[in-house]
Amino acid sequence: MSIRKAREFRKSMTAPERRLWAILKQRPDGFKFRKQHEHGPYYLDFFCYEAAVAIEVDGLAHELGTNPQRDERRDAWLASSGIRTIRVRATDVRDNLEGVIAYITTACRERVIG
Image 1 (cartoon, rainbow, N blue to C red):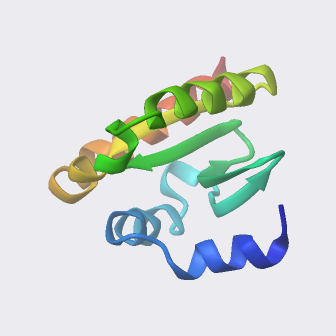
Image 2: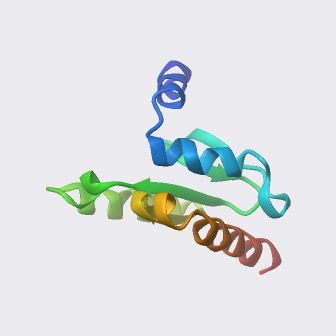
């Protein structure tokens, strides 16, 4: 993994990722998020360090071929590192951004408060 690759990912975010980032970078509910954060062998779409929550925006490609199994392995690896992965559908980011933000901030709050 490299800083260069992370920078490339940051520049080539999908439309739903850009839309979600426009809100997450404003620190909803006081939580700070990073985009395209490198963690171990993976790049996380978004990451809240304080709550140890990764947010992944899943488009159609995540449902095809071996991608669901790959995502399961990735989520298990992150869980073994103490990170909870939240997966949101790209269509939900498009159609229900407020609901997605509420879901994310609630999950972060639950992890911090315990």
